[in-house]
Length: 147
Image (tube, rainbow, N blue to C red; front, side, top):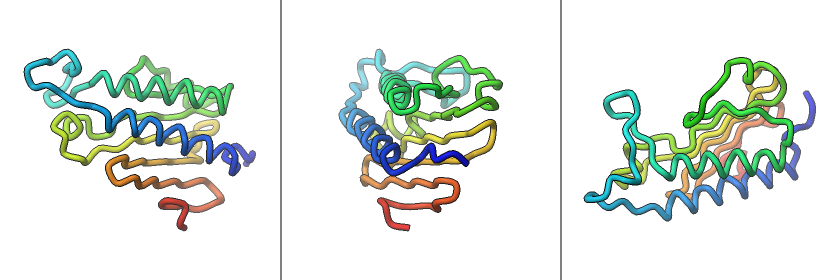
């Protein structure tokens, strides 16, 4: 496997996802103003301006680190072939949007990566606890840099 997730790229990624976490924590919702929350297809399926903002920040930041990357992300139109050719990041900008809207402190930023369709990387960041869980193929899994 190519050394895509070397120490430098992992450090840049961690800074990026933590910046997105700060943006997530800056959220405040006014129950009388629904402009920040939109309903999607399912019953309890919502998207917020924060979901969209974090996803945009992640995609733009990841393109700076990995210029040839493709993206399969929750809040955009996706194409299955993007997951099979080259490096593809799979993004859920706010995993647990309903919890996020209700300020329950139980939401994360989730990012995975596939190389030619094979999973090689995963990250879940909990900005409420500042816990980052990372797994890299061939390197193991870590919580806050502890194996």
